[in-house]
Length: 217
Image (cartoon, rainbow, N blue to C red; front, side, top):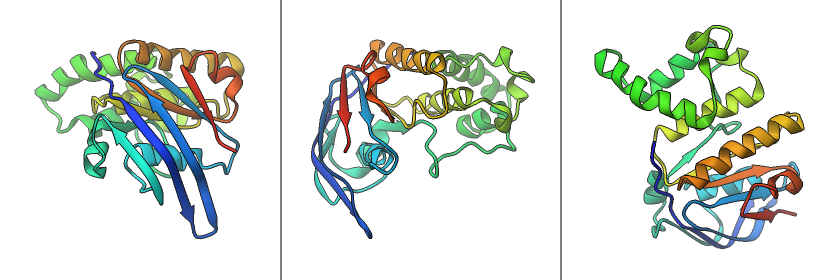
């Protein structure tokens, strides 16, 4: 699975909600194939910032250019979201295979070929070995561990062949060793050309893998 990353330039992005600022004056630049971390505590606006970078949320002020495009629809076409709470959560009653099926389209022989060629590659690049799951591809999403769910979200996003992948809450609920493994996967994706922006609560671990860390107050 080949990647063509895009350049991301955000300048002085701010978002105000009904109860005040969500995030303020955030600037970051990510080159094609770069891995950028956004670190901040709960309530710092890191998820909203990622949604803004994905073209899913309009900032109150500031500018955003993704792959040379600033129009929100074109930004959306260049980006894909990994698992994001409240936005694209997995359906616990559906299996891994079901989630892939929904993303790939109708059943039948063409789907089987697409699965073997495309979905299988996406799962491998996301680091999710379905043979190690309790029921393989038929394992329900609610039986996945946190890191397995995040990896499935990454695989589903990769099926969109984005230039920019956004992954939220990388370190949420993970022991340090699993956190290292997940950051390593994101680093490998970026080293192969995909632009990746990932959010986390602490900058220390992220700083070992990311090219740059943007800290939100």
